[in-house]
Length: 461
Image (cartoon, rainbow, N blue to C red):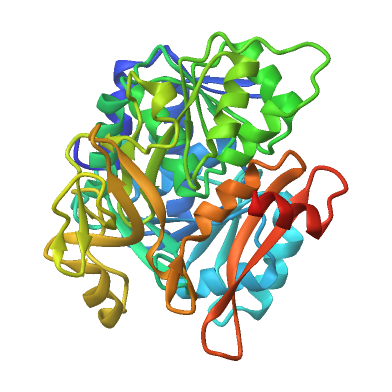
């Protein structure tokens, strides 16, 4: 399987009667889903979508997102996922940056989209998923009937990443990139068609898209999409549907761990909880385990490379803060300015070599020279490989605070402050001084009334 349509078509035939998606009161099998995808692809084609066109999706997590993604791919067009929380100026920027020809959305976003398209230089066409468009009498029943030959090395999806240099940069991930990542995830995480995935991390973001929605479809498993994170809803979906795979972000695990449920929900069906997109504090992981009897495994990845590593160590209690070992087929090295580090525990920048990685940012040659070198993508993340062989993130290379020539790791201070009983969330940054260096500044969200003096005394220990 070398392209996304080929992948989905194969999985759908192998799992035709299995349930693919349960979206509220809508339940569809893989056979039914493929027919719906083929129908939507025909509608897209009738609006003028052709191979190589950029087609955006502005939809919440749900069955319509799944259908839209694979319908666009079936035509050999390029998917551009849009965050359904985008404001007018953000949506306009990304539509124009990608040269989007068609925007697939729902009536819920009609007012926003119509306003954006009215000021867009080259207005995109709108296709509402609710519309019953006229399609050819002999509508294709499967995606293979379209007969479009797709080169695996052509773009399948455009996304944006700030990477290690701040401003959003356009990224083209190919069919080959995505297929490699999905196949590696299937093997590394031992995913099967018996699994049930909770889809609450946004499908517009790499975490919810690749590690939940797409991984579920690749496995022939069942997806339970949730359009908006609400603790009670998520807990009910997990318990009622015996969810086995829950891949999310630290905030979501935190909200569940700290929820004051009248009756503790039963999460015994979960066999794998994975956190990505940001480091998960050890204290939070322990709290989640105390409430629900399962530890959350940390996963490390980026938009540029896809999934890099995941912590599946059997010594989970001793390695809660680790991002584990590289997934199958991925290499990770730790580099200093002088080259690879000599010993375990030596800190350096993490560099990744992966068939899932992009070859460079679109139209940014100077940036590419800096971060893509000798087949590696230099992540800008600082880390170490411990004596146990596991990877540990330390901080961002460019985000160290320069205090009088001393490099201070803001993550260490954040971890210290997170131990204070009154601290809910904290971000530590460097604030420029008149002397050309920086002072340490902590922005704190407290659980209860808390004074500056209390925090200072706590830090002094």
